[in-house]
Length: 328
Image (tube, rainbow, N blue to C red; front, side, top):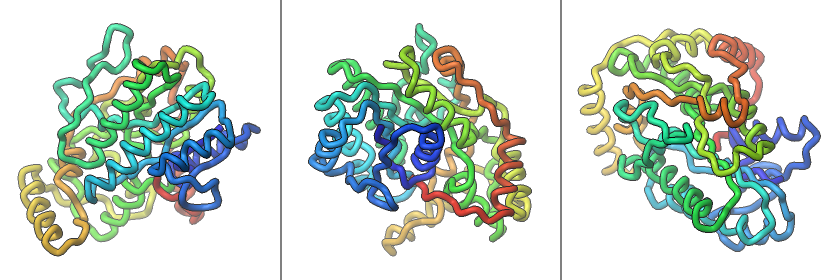
């Protein structure tokens, strides 16, 4: 079995779990002590698949950020996925599990919860949010879906929510750093809804997806199953777990977007990366929900770790000073 993005947060957690279960796993990345392969190089990817002949591939590699040039995201997220799909079709791969994201359906609450006739998440992909990460993840999922429909690619698409745990840059490390600097995080009063997903719950789902015949051809959303946790509640719990000051200061969405827009323009002139983006502000203000009913029905997935338990485990890991995995 191959796991791309093995040096990252999700890929690394999956590799550790599979090896603990006795599986033969080859972790693939351009970082760390793994099999080196650059997914943006078609020859690298095809050569790897031809040489190792994996029966299954989990594609967890991605450029994960809300800042940077669109071309860099296209190269990794879209073309990298296209290269992997081509290699899987050229070899004898029996299953590709593709890690997509809930961001591929956009941020509008008006479509939240809409399902297709089979109960799969039937919301259309959104390609024009202006976020290089959101838009290229949608295009990457489209590449996989087209290969499933047109070429018979045996694949499962998993759309994780907001994945947190030790090593999560967007949902643990970065917000803790901001709270310690007393940067206001409660945009719009912290009323936006977070689709929190404990890392071990996601890994549970990925293991199930690797072994389920019924999962082939499915698009499955994975979260902790809660649709009512606000960002205000999440950041307050995170502050307690990380021994950081509670989030304070309430900034309206309109004011936050105006301030961040100005910072983005200034950073563009200076050719430096902005600390925040307008897409990040919009994301934490969203009120969309993401049902996991299809994952429950197809995989038998049931989130084992609640937010309370996840935060308890995270607090213990932070107190012990455990090293964090790199973000994929």
